[in-house]
Length: 308
Image (tube, rainbow, N blue to C red; front, top):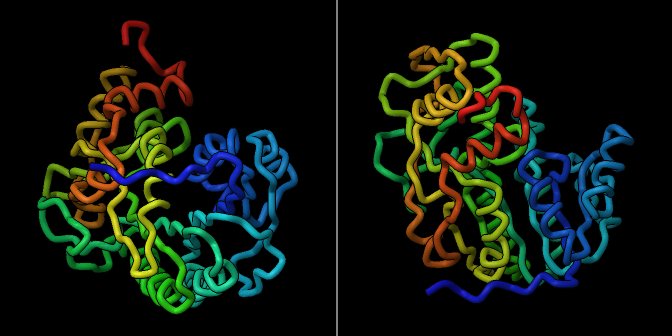
């Protein structure tokens, strides 16, 4: 039995990391019925115009600052901001320390959703990782600071939730994809340019990708599940799909040649257990093949073969 989702109709929401690819479909969906404040640095005026076109109010903020006093009062906060500069001091300060300052500013919200990553799990084997699995430096070969700063951010968020009595959900996201630039799309672009795709030798390189339609639908449930004791849940698709599978399917749809480069430096298998997610939010609904084809139709329709 799933929990009752919060009603976001007419509510005021702050969404950080608003110009990121993962956040924009959320903003577009929620702005239809909620008052959405989209927070980002907005280095280009066109970004603010684009955000307004989605129905949101752009809010200029630099998360490198610890002063969030000028941000608007809201009912709910969705934190999707992340720094990946590769500089330890910068990324730990923004992703972890300043998350604490942000939560201090919003200690009176009805709920706070912090979007973390399944990159916090230690690489081990092909067993699906549940929320109690060992943590580790999963992404060190790709983004040196990413996994560690994400782990630090979770610790700071837990502290802030308990200290300020903020209902908190930490959702560990696994391969978000949809009609926006995402990991499968980048693989498609590599195929188009004749570039081999890195895969780990411990094959298959399985993941639990989740389509934007599904992670958007789960947000009201994740907010409803929030607790000052922190609700921790994997945010992932119910189907296990390998890099090899989605690349082979994209090759089938487009006719593009596909080649792999086997290397220990590639990210290895990272499938996760979605039992808790299903209990809280219900099952996912987007089959991965339909989601991948929809992505290509939206972003690179000229690549599709006529019979696909």
